[in-house]
Length: 310
Ligand code: PBG
Image: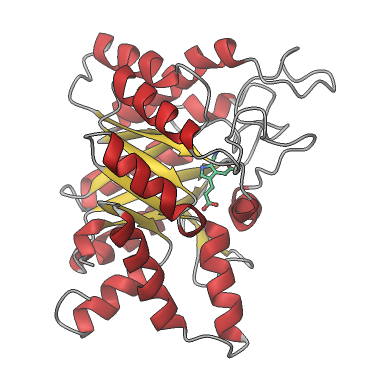
């Protein structure tokens, strides 16, 4: 593992000088844009070259309109990082679930005013394109759609190209399972669905071959790199996808994977540092070129201390 193979996620909230620790994710906090850019500068000094931003808005609505607000937390953080650490690759997660009052990743049929929890795939696509444009305008290098609507990579690519952002990269969450391991993230982002679940648009853990279909479809639509998520429970899928497509692959060691390692270590049942390295190595061994990890900073510090890759 090298520090430049890691991508560090951040939760960006509104305001100035705000740090709200996330109880279920030891060592992580919701940070305002100014503090995010301070942390990002430290990561750059440790050799980490990419960060992934999630927004936690103060106000949510039925459409998730905060997601495309030019003054929202993510655009603010992008601009601030661009100023302080221009060489950092800034990835902006594109999804509506952090911004909708119902907590789903797309518009609901009936636009969120009734109890129906069916997501309207096609009506969501133009909104995702709007979000991607807002992040591109703010200076994001990478647009990372995690909503799992069908056709969104093509919709985002077209919107970016039409607006003169041909140079922006799309890293799509092509393979994203409906997983039990997203719990701490949903606490961090306040994005747990109010009703229903995400099984209508995220993938069924029983199904491995669907991953190949999703991966190939996203590459055909214009994805430059794809993400497989979660990580550790899906090592077989990472390997299959690695062998099937010719774009780089990032594995996402998600919040629940991070938190369960911390929880067990806190009880003295496992060694935190060793588990951190072993799980990250497993993802690399399975075929991931990059690893998106809440351990990014700790890994980078440990790598620096050992003065070489692990
Ligand atoms: C948004 C999104 C989620 C994660 C990344 N993007 C949450 C979800 O699908 O509920 C989870 C990441 C993590 O658990 O660390 N759609």
